[in-house]
Length: 483
Image (cartoon, rainbow, N blue to C red; front, side):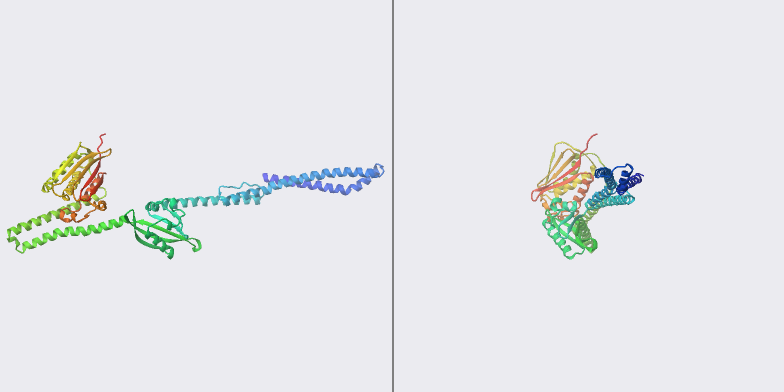
């Protein structure tokens, strides 16, 4: 309604101005006739002075009319600019804001239907662009979240070899920061040689490639399943490559453990069975007639049967402990009483090697644990110390505590363990050297059972050892606190 009124007002002004202009023209044309009539009626002599006077009056009147006409034209021009040009300028400014990426900009122009339609079209375009921008931001955030939480290391390299995208997993694996990587050429990052060769291969072939590579980081061998592929944009344009690395070190380790487990268990079972079968056949073939040989063979069969029973029992215990959901009974337990029971069990073996216990207990400590399982833990540790220590040495037992844990240390003066072997001693059947051979009489499962039982108590176990001097095993069990 407002626009319609403005239009009527402009039309009225235009008509008024036109009438004034026409009147001015008519007056100019009728002036000579008027002048002649004026002189005749008033019986005024037609002189030059009179004529000049009338002309000056007419000029004054015409000047007033022209001035008024110019004012009307200026006003009309101003109204037209305001009505037509200003809305167009407003729409233009809005379009420029959209070009800059400000999709929140809106046009508020008013005017003829064409301007209104243009304004509405610009606003609809702005809303669509804003929605597209929101969707793009959401997709970018999703992609960023996916890349950061995918669990695999990822790096994207453009066609010039410059790193464009890298996730936290990659940075963590190679001890890099985002500033060390972003915008740098991948050859300047000092990546492992095997990985650089893999990246070069994908660059040269521009084809997907998958390979398992071994990388040495911080004196440790890490195995990675690496996948590389070219990144292709619109119209088949080659943009670069993406490399995804998945750490399979644990899988390789578990596979090796599985293979070793099958091989060693097969051997461990076969050895006593072979002995039992061989000596039994010998006795059946007539050796039983020799009483001395009979008793010797029966003793061997008995020992091998015990060895076989121990192996099966340890396998059953380990299988039970490793089952998901395995729990122990948590009750206040005296570490001193647990050690006393463990010492009673292992004392006969200590006496056989003429060894002694050195007990260092300032005061008893109570922990939350299962007494029977803790006795099993410390019996295994003490038995190991006795087994791998020379005669006439000492096994030291200590009880300590800190804010959170009750601590038991079992220290011997034995053969010690190589530093590189310490992380593996809790693996099933692992034996680091000849001294830890099957001739020791153990099953090779004791420390694996110990580790699982300590973890079931929410505790910790650590080992310090020096080859030729001895080993100290430290067990930490959560302390009991009275409410």
